[in-house]
Length: 142
Image (cartoon, rainbow, N blue to C red; front, side, top):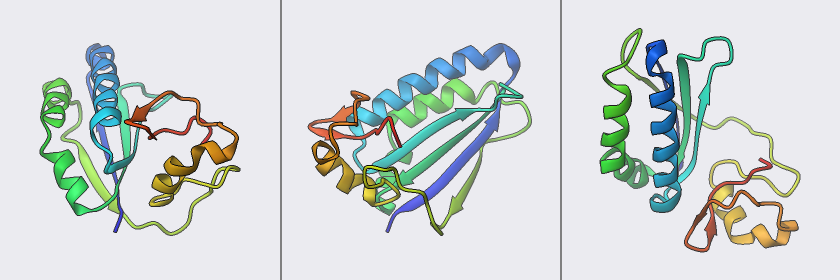
């Protein structure tokens, strides 16, 4: 069963650029090494750029555990941990109630894996270039 989770935190203003670089490196690692991490989005608040929220979908509990125990997570935590402003990262678990699917067939929860297998059937719209082996892990239109 898929695991839906967010992680939210705030950093000191002088560390925003460092944390953004760490996020980019971390997401590149996820795309290359964690097929069980079906979705990982990192957002920065527009009105307060010191605030970040990360959205995750893990295929199952095993994928969530592998993610949490990876060296990449430890490296990322080391990048933002010394700079929190306003407390620790707050992780929140969710259940999927409903979601909007993209025009090409959707990628909500477990549908992402199916989309990855059939991306060429959607007119090749998945052009983000982020691949895990031959599997597309990010859809730039969804």
